Length: 435
Image 1 (cartoon, rainbow, N blue to C red):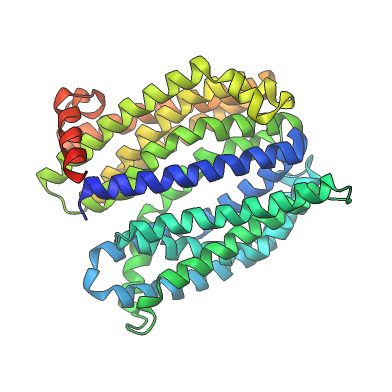
Image 2: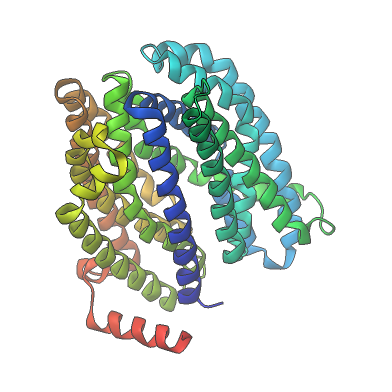
């Protein structure tokens, strides 16, 4: 399957999962209300960030190995599964032991969030294994399987929420936050089971390879600083913000982030394909990666402008009057989404060329800037300050990443971001040919 067709397949699947994810988030926000939404997301983000920080970068390591050793796919699968189980159990134990410290630092003012977090910790090994095996399938360019795994668990997640909403409408005494936690656990479990089922072709062949395991871990450790910073940048505002502002305000901020981040679907669909193609290290690969970067930039900016101009009524209609105060946050955060998406595409270009360390500096600057801006702005201006902190940090990282990409690919600034007529013509030809 060609690069462009893979991109279209992934984008189509992502759009389907986006619709389900967005619907689930609407259900969640309306079911929980702002305060409980804040508590749930503080718990979920704390669990997710902890697991990704402690998993030693094995997910990108597995993707790299799956793409590089196509003739040894079964061995890569067996080795990846073994590593994910070993690392996942270690992560679960570590987070459990650190829970008292996290309770005093992150959850001091969020007792409901900590109760939800405590229920998620035992399932972290399942979440890590599901993540790793899903990434393995993507590394094998099995985009249809990858899309399937992205969609079905979201159906189950929404189903659990709908069951809770139905019980509540019938007058049953329902703990909405507890139902949301159960829905998340079902999502993680179903992701692992589906990944195992769709990877069944690799069960009977191959064996654990210690040398391959070392290669996966070595590459994972190389990109681990980037993974650490990436997830810190994406989620630390919610976690750190929980120590500075009330749960209800965190709920408003989370819903605004969720809407703004839906635009990231454009770039997220291209990231793994850029990574896989750039690993070939050819002139054509560079040209295709820059083409996708320009197309993604145009699509992202266009969507952000449309949302900012006409989105307020839809925002309030969909989420309810209780979330009206979050619209201004959403408009501000659109700028953060644009800058973050472009930076992530550039980082995948650098990582695919075997130079993941080049992106660490820009991410470190962005992460450090984010912490500084949160301390300066969120404590004084509340959720509005938290939103501006995200925007300012995202653009500080993008500036550095852009300079690094120019030097590594020997390209001009215009080649990265400014859409060309030839890009539109090429895209039209390919789509017509596909049709």
